Amino acid sequence: MKILFTGGGTAGHIFPIIAVVRELRKMGSDAEFFYAGPKDDFGEIILSQEGLKIKWILAGKIRRYLGWKSVLENLVDILFKTPLGFIQAFFYVFTLAPDLIFSKGGYGSLATMMAGQILQVPIILHESDAVPGLANRFISKFTNQVFVAFPVTQTEYFAEEKMVAVGNPMRIELLNGDAEKAKDYFDLTGEKPVILVLGGSQGAQAVNDLLLAILPQLLVDFEIIHQTGSKNLEQLKAEAKVVISEELARRYHPVGFLKEVELRDTFKVCDLVISRAGSGSIFEIAASEKPSILIPLASSAQDHQLKNAYAYAQTKTAVVMEEANLTPRFFHEKIKYLFANPDELQKMAQKAKEFSRPESAKVIAGYIIKYLTK
Image 1 (spheres, one colour):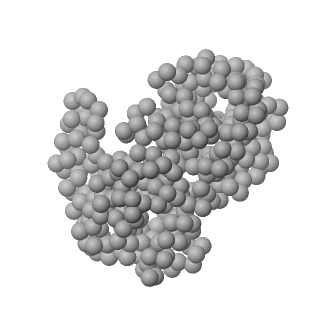
Image 2 (cartoon, one colour):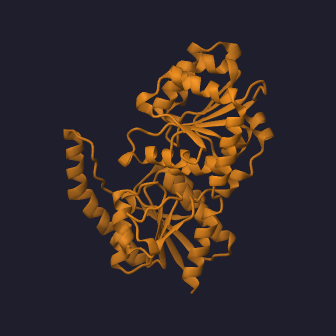
Image 3 (cartoon, one colour):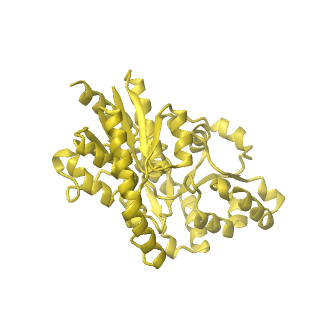
């Protein structure tokens, strides 16, 4: 039995796929697992570690922002990448003959899903975002099942009879953290509340700059663990060294990227999470039962991070701070306000727990097994 996974290649697509694969294995599935999608160094490392066999597929995308450069890139993608990607995907799916395709969606998965539809391979789609992208809206018409992450109606985009709200598949191992291990790993002083700042797998320059602007003031009252993005780490260390004293530096712990075992322990030890608003991050924060401040990526496609953030925050789980209107002073004041009102933080943590769906990957894996064995 063969199951082909596909997605956009970013952490927001890769980690949910890994979560589903792990649950399938726990349930005793003897299926072979494959992945097809756009080339991505991060995805290659993570997927290979989980034993998936990888096929890179060219993928074009439509850029909706203005400018001659984006017009030229769109032409190249439409005329060359997209057709070539479809040919690659068609022959790969035809040769592989998978029993089922599981898609995390996005432009990078479109060629594989279209090939699967033409070759009559059953397709299961998972939509992570509060508002689906164009690729998922299009291909959902040909899928057998559409799982959605957010518990809001999306019947204007997907057929109601196909749609099931399950949350976002997450690595259940993230719930088994140990605060003491995080204290040892980061050499935490234990003197102040701990704030975890997550910029996504690639980091977030705007968040890094915002934090750096108020770092000396923050470190007076808090201890900070900061995932900077690997490419930003050394520069940020150098800049931080200029603005904070040696004494305050004891409370600042920058790291390029938190691996799974480090992230699960860090979730346990922190008191507040500051993060971008990708669906994967939101559901991991919720399952960790932590209050959060979400800073949506302003340039995300169709403002999906902004919509994710407000879909989550409307349940009183988080504070949303939009990048366009966010000043260092306002950011600092909001953090101080939350910690000056511990009851507020506790309510946010409780609401996060109520929102979370840590069993999502297990539900999806169970459906896949049931479908393939019926």
